[in-house]
Length: 73
Image (cartoon, rainbow, N blue to C red; front, side, top):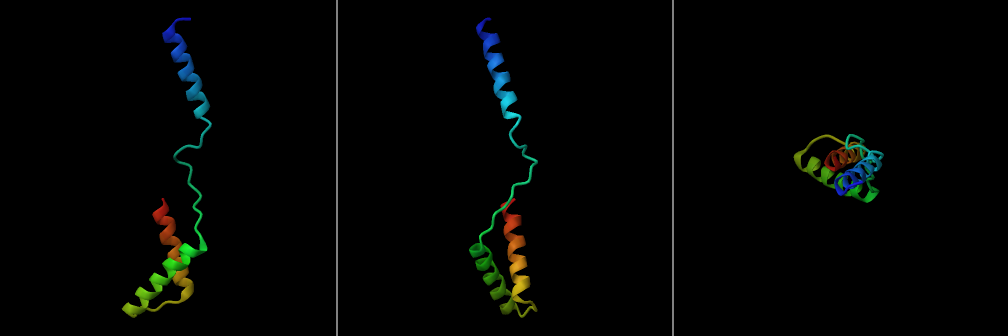
C-alpha cells in the first residue's frame, strides 16, 4: 500500500466515525436557569409597567422563556 492510499484510507475511517455524530439539523436542547428567566421576566415587567401595558407575572415569565430560547438558537 503506498502513502496516498494509506492516507485516503485513514481519511475514510475518520469520516465514517464522525458520521455517527449528531447532525447540525438536530435541535439543541436549551437549558435555562430559573435565575436567567426570573431576571428577564423582571425587566419585561418593568418595561411593561413603564409603558402602561396590561399584563401579569405569568405572561412576563412566559415571554422571558420564549425570548431566551429564541436567543439561544
